Image 1 (cartoon, rainbow, N blue to C red):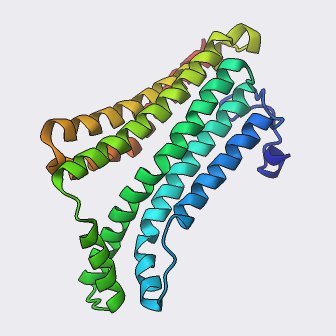
Image 2: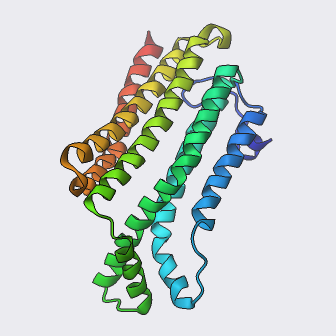
Image 3: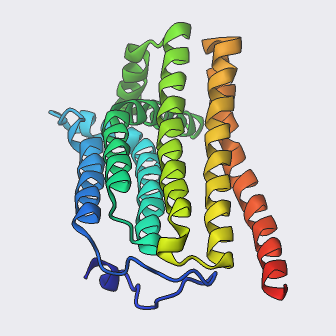
Amino acid sequence: MKKKLLGITKEVSKEGFRYRGIQTTRLENLTDAVFGFSITLLVISSQVPTTYIELQASMYSFIGFIFCTILLLGLWNNHSNFFLYYGLNDAKTKVLNALFLFVLLFYIYPLKYLFSYIGTAIYAIIKRNMGDTSEALQTALRNLDAADLNVEQWEDLMIRFGLGLFFIYLIIILMHLNALKQAKYLKLNLKEIYITKTFIREYFLLMSIAIVSILVVIIFGGRAAGYSGMVYLLTPIVIPLYKKYRIRQMVDLDQN
């Protein structure tokens, strides 16, 4: 029912991958509930404002909330596509999915803390450069000062963030490897096997970006936290380039 509401009525993807999981399973329903709870935690974990000024100041972290939500919805979409493509419900998939949910829930607070801090800082700088001198801005700046992250804490925070992404992508890779091992059972054709392998390579690239980010702060310390964060800007560059390469290779596969 959920997939019908999302408009998934065809049985084949644009790339020609046959859907094997059109019917939603209890495993997917559980995962959707956890994702919904995770997004809820991004909101309810914040302290409720007691004054209007505090309410205005809390809006400065809205950019961070948007970034967090986009990241979570991206992970949800990738997870949903896996079950749509393969429709697996075997014991190994259940175990890997449980690990995925565990890491996701454990990852929420470091994710919220980091993006709330960065989002508030970005918005505060923009408002200050626009000449804003409101009490709400001063409150937001005081909240940033109260965090008072030192060099070691920045290093630890970036490592935690990177490890969270690393393990999430690793688990998704293992789920696809499990699907690849069951190629005969799933009756995957050559194109579907190729697409599965390219999914694995994509997540490996994402995992590699997380590793590079972690190495930056391990080698250069917390003072390089900004550069560690900028490493993730490689994602919208590397992944589209790889997808273009993958499409060219798939065209050659179709011609052969």
